[in-house]
Image 1 (tube, each protein chain N blue to C red):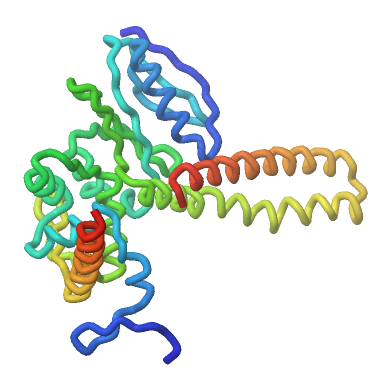
Image 2: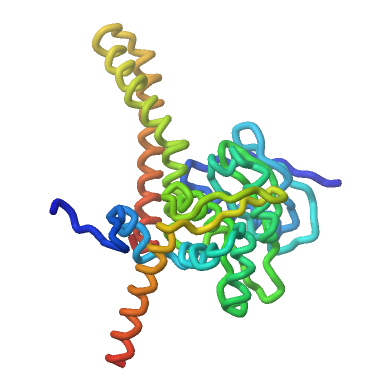
Length: 116
Length: 179
């Protein structure tokens, strides 16, 4: 073994991806969460406002940068363009990363609840 | 319509200062129209208002400009212009007093700085190391051309000042964002 691998469904995830995305920013989290169905950046912003009752408002600079970066890292993929808006969808890798992040948050939550 | 021009010099990492400058001008009744040349800021008289100005530096965005600008427009930002690789946006402070920004976490602010570094600092550094320093040494040791050496020395000093101020700014930013 020359590196610590993360095995998920028999496949190996690039440790670099795990290092960068677990933990991830709120914007990255909501991008993955919302892109289980195809959507564009602004669509995600709107969806997150709905989900959090206006509590979290994602911003376009952060959104644009995150989408490009996540597309390069193959967590999401470009689907098509509609009226100058690029639609993306989550990939299998993206789903795995989201699942890892959810487990991390769950673990933290459980620990905190036991202690508090 | 009454207009006004002001010359302002901002070094590479001073885009926050520039944003504050444009916001202050708008609050004083001078609406930003454009920046051109070496830093000539054009304004027109307006009703004083609190408007947030934001600069992004995103070459990928510029390459896909329609789609890039559309996302900002959708989020309520007015796109103004591009200048030296930066894109200028503005948005009025909302009635509940919330001054929005185009970045919402420290990670994306750092990434913007890194893009600025790659796009603007790196070429300067290359020029500095591959041309200015060798020429300066040659002018002293081979050409013995002292006026040239003094001239190059001054440019070197200016460059060093810029680098110093930029790295100070970068570190300050890095520390304040907790990295």
